[in-house]
Length: 534
Image (cartoon, rainbow, N blue to C red; front, side, top):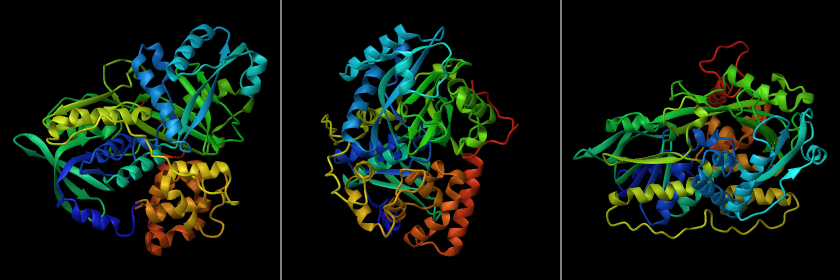
């Protein structure tokens, strides 16, 4: 996808080409816009100042869902659109977006109660064109969700949503965009907007590797930087309209919190939804929803208050498991781009996306991972006045075109073959062919193959070790200490592919471990945090 010397060749042609669109931001929204623009025959460029999916799009809750809770808020259209997009992704991105059943226990005296929840699920099913049984007796429900608290249990409800590897979803969308003629480059910062007659007409870029600056012009400049959007919007002299909210998560061993269903509950402190579900060979627990007032230039990290909040939820729902801090493999925190309406409770803010056209700069922010395709199409619709002479088709393409399944290989299970096709599309066969002896084995404690490390190092624009272990693969989240014990083998597989000498590897490893300890490990006990989790 990104072959040898791709960066030098791409950088050299940036200022020479006449661009229709420059997209700033390499998360799921920017990737979606690049894909839609390229499929419409536009000359489209995406630049990302860090790595692809560095921000929110690698630190989400990993759910592709309709937003059942939005029904309670009267967000019927948002829920309908989300449910339809979820169904579309399940069909067209199989192996990357997978079904996930949810179980919600009904306890005596606790909201929302059987009647209200059942009504919501009936609407949810109607939007998806489905009909399923939802309510189970206590005995039946405990078979579906063992280890949960039994005191006051009256039964439980089950429903279906979906999950994904969010960073891999971004990479797959970028892969399809590049195949359609788009250009994407990471570690390329948009330093300032170019203006003609007071309107944005391009950007000044700075290469994060060489430091070199160059100017690119475009008919339309689209900021898809999510929670970071106000930095560029300030150059248009407009007021702040975003409210960055942090969502933090815990990663635990699957054997320690054994859940086949996603277990959803209302937190005993504030009634917010919290979940625990199986993901990539571990159990993921989340999430918090707090104002993020830290420097947006730094990575977010869980606070002690948020850790205590999530541990309280685990203790409430799984009292017999006796989960402690020592059980936690890793943590991660993402910052959501939410439109600020001034509500006192962060969780009450809407999750709709917004599009603003200000002095020629089109900003798109907010929204949900699930609806990235609709958000991208809406952004292009708003950009149409800037794209003189460019027709934007109303035709709806498949999210991903059909890819033939991998042929039978005794070294790979059906699940693994399906997973590879979902994540890598037409490159899945090349990944398998590139694997050396023993590399089609699974990395213990994960669903990841060693061969995925080699392929990412060779073909997926990896510039730093953190790119490889936190986003191209998720080894840094799935293994203790960020996979430190595995680093010697990773080095054997990847160092030559990356073209790094021993000194470069040593520096990258040290930087990665320092980053992991600061932002993906547990906060020090007793450490004071700047916000409460509730």
